[in-house]
Amino acid sequence: MPISCSAVDCSNRFVKGSEIRFYRFPISKPQLAEQWVRSLGRKNFVPTQNSCLCSEHFQPDCFRDYNGKLFLREDAVPTIFSNSGGDGSKIELRKNRGGLVAKDANDSSRFASLSGPKDRRQPIRDSSMKGRGMNDRRRGGGKLSSIDRQSLSLKSKVYDSKGMLISCGKDLCDCLDVDCMGCFYPCPECGSRKCGVECRCDRKWLYEQVEVEGGEIIRNKFAN
Image 1: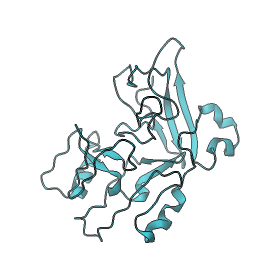
Image 2: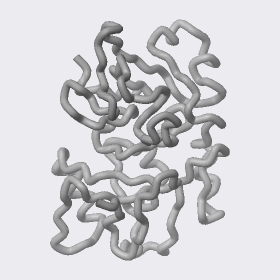
Image 3: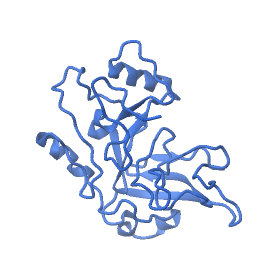
Image 4: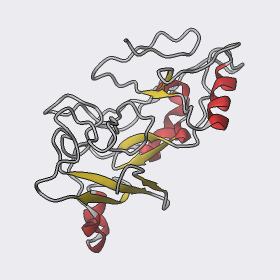
């Protein structure tokens, strides 16, 4: 089933390798989902588990920078719609190696602070990095604070051959956002956009938590 944006007059569809990202409606958070629907402006629209909005409908401050990669904040609400009464201009978030690009030149300054490092798939290791220097942890300017990962025995696999968590069968992105449909560059091994540093297929460890700039911590609800 093709993934398309639920916004009126938006024809964006998910294309592998595209700079436009898609986010499912947070139906697990009813109040937030209601805000999304209200902002969307579609009368009698009821989102399903497959309903999505693309990244072009979110303001820059709806995203957080994690080692040069942009992730949608857990409390983000889309506000850029052609029927919202604004000037109708869209803001395009691009995951180019040079950082973000605004379609409107007047908005370019708003993206300056969110520019990331050149390589978005640079390896970031576990919490042992906390004892290293800040420059080492930031990996060339990224705003990562730390990552904790949970390793099991060498004989145990956390993910199956398709990159699904064996414990629950979930296709969880390495950013740990349960609603994320993939925000990394395509994995060179399996092609998934949900693999972070290493391919998830048959992987023997998982991320326990991710701490981003400002002290915000995202925990893996499926970690033991």
